[in-house]
Image (tube, rainbow, N blue to C red):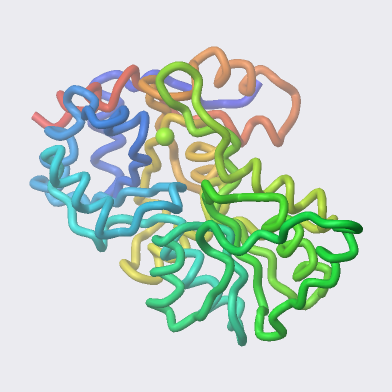
Length: 307
Ligand SMILES: [Mg+2]
């Protein structure tokens, strides 16, 4: 059995908060649900900052910019600036520019936010939006395979795209048949949880392209470590004095484990305590990485330790 998954009592909570100077928060299911803040979350975030803690917001959502997240946070009452937000859209563009040193343009499966972040980094892109669709005629497979490809494309980037079609899958696959073409995905969440069950997420589009191209995408979002690396670079945060707070074991908590951070699971979102316990009791070391260090019923449970 793995260690961890300890409920945060008030004394333990005070101890943890004294040992960190940075707290990373996932947003949906942690600080808000839909358009309503989780009770106590606004007071927590504001009081943490009043007491000198650094707070950052992490999201796998590729459809919103830092600016848009900052506005949503402030509209709900959170003290937050866009620089405190780390999302997969700006981090994907940063990755292509700084890490992959992309020369050429991007074939983008994704929307206006991703397009804007690529532009910010001076990267040209094609493919975004409803896009031209070929009309199936006689021998359509030959027509699709003969559609001219843009020789400038050096990367395929996949984010959330409500205009995803067979033709986009086909074009992405054909670009990726060139082994030098970079294959990047914002995130691999397969479900966007919504009231009443949810809808397919970016991960479903990524899986389709992985299957068709027989390649594996490099992933920017949680549970990958890249967003934390961006934070370390931009803000000089110290991972040993940082805690990650999230509602999903397979993204938030696993990212924390992958980065060597302590983690807190909050039970107001997707994952349950039973799931965490099942990972804890399993014999697989891989599943032990999904076990949070601590858990709380809600982030409001951290508030009394700040009095
Ligand atoms: Mg969440």
